[in-house]
Amino acid sequence: MSTWTEREYADPVPYLRHRGELVLSLGPLLEPGDRLVDLACGDGGLADFLPGIDYLGVDADPRMVEEARSKGHPIVHADLNEFEPDEPVAATSLFRAIYYARDRVAFLRRVAGYTERKLVFDLNPRQYRLEDVTADLRAAGLTRVELRPFFVPQTHALPRPVGRALVAAERTGPLARVALRFRFTYLVAASR
Image 1 (cartoon, rainbow, N blue to C red):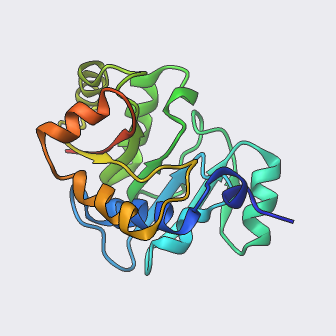
Image 2 (cartoon, rainbow, N blue to C red; image 1 turned 90 degrees about the horizontal axis):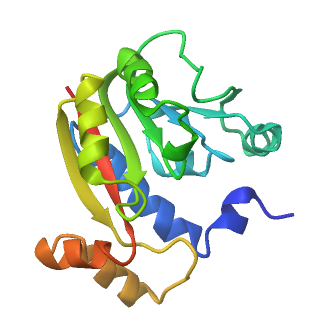
């Protein structure tokens, strides 16, 4: 039986490896031993690509909680709008799920309240205006925002040389921003 990660991602290893690298390095750095809460984590597939990080997944879907636990990933069954960890965390991540926030500013304030170093999430600039999300982050006290295009596709497995070329293209500045008008997402790291 396949896991959610295997069903959702055409080639999960390069996708999640690159995402994990950016979670660690975009914005303030994360180091081994830092605690990260992964909201709307699915089956916790990202945990395998965050070496040394004290990972805790959170998901509202009981099937995802069951799958994550079957893979040995620590997970809490909770809605991201209400979840708060027992103690502050270095980082919080949220992928493919910002639209689950019932009130984006209130949600971001809640996350900023328990996140000491950074919030990392993906943002589709064709779905949400970057200026609006940046204003919401600032209203929540997360005033430093770093963006990185993310060009590794979720639904298509690519030959390795093409995948490496797309990752390299993420750093092409104006060309990357043009590509984002039509496809792909930003990874956002927001901090104080």
